[in-house]
Picture 1 (cartoon, rainbow, N blue to C red):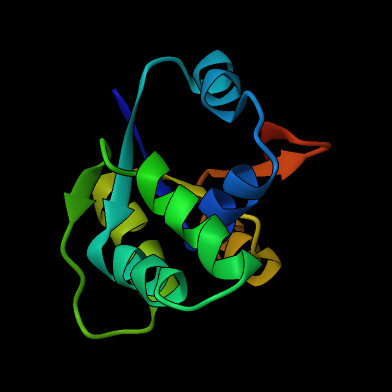
Picture 2: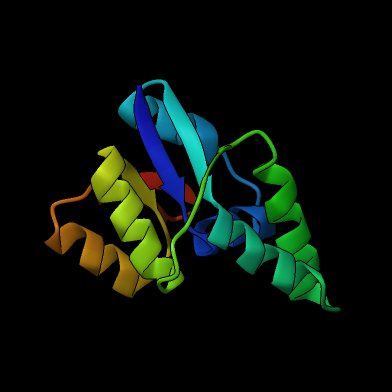
Length: 122
């Protein structure tokens, strides 16, 4: 089964504008195992602890990820942890962050992003 490691940018985007992202990913890669790195969860928790629209979106994103598998992080930057985990796990990276997507693609990692509100393989 394919593992998909989610970045906070992807989860925030689908929390902000609900879509068929889960079904879209299933259509493209088959059954998959969603994964959230602990450092991405901490990033979302930090954002959720504030006030305003962004914090509400982060809370929804955290709710979306409650059933995801969790993986530990080392001490590197979050994006570096995502790349490292995706490489080690042979996983896809789900992100809307252009730089993270570019880095993942340069390393021949599969990338899932959003195009017109739908999840797509890049």
